[in-house]
Length: 342
Image (cartoon, rainbow, N blue to C red; front, side, top):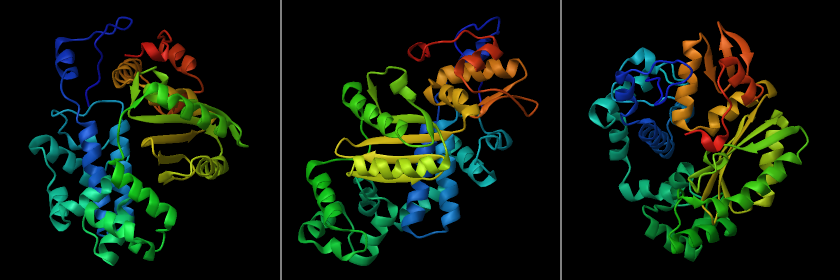
């Protein structure tokens, strides 16, 4: 992957070749969407659960990877340096970079009608719910779903109670979709409420928004929150959040991450739980911007370090990571406020 930045950083030499690569299109988001769709369609087809999780995890890692994947990144071994990217997924990345498509994804799409695939865009419906609707009630489109919801047919299925049915009807009649952009003004009260919930949980030592919210962006695609807390705290957080926001759809839950979409705002929230020694490094990583992270990593490499969301390492030994300032000091870089991390 390309490692560079567009400014001179304490004597670090940026060549014309660096600038050329830096200006190339990044395919991280495109690949994230492609591999997420593969996992979703595999779920509808009831494929192997371990393979499904592998695609979801690889998609997330590719999206969050702090270096852009460009059309020049066709070295399989280098792509496999990305966490959770094995040989098979690396080969699919290369195919996408060369042709703009992935054969396996095209095969999956041919097995599932487009109106059924489009139901994945409907709030409150994940791939397993779409599969249940399709296989058990022969619901093949959003139009079929609305009719079945209004007549109460979908309540015949396990997990489709009156509350969920109403949420689905509301989503379909108001044209809600899972992904949208949000103004900072609308997201701030939700962020404050979530931080309050999290900091009141036993075992949570610290919680702070990250991502574009922390960089003071005017509008956001989603909300990232970083938490120092125990595994038990993560499970407790999920329960408290469900109680505070009854209209939400869970996307992921576990000891290190809780992800969900809040309705009717259609806001995706990703909450990550990290150990104290990684908090500063993770805050740097998940605050971004992508360009700033690329610069930080290149400086680290030039000084013989490895920098990631877990900390700053040298020859496999942990060096720093508890605070952002600690990482910057070790790299001999000035600390920048999040709003200035362009």
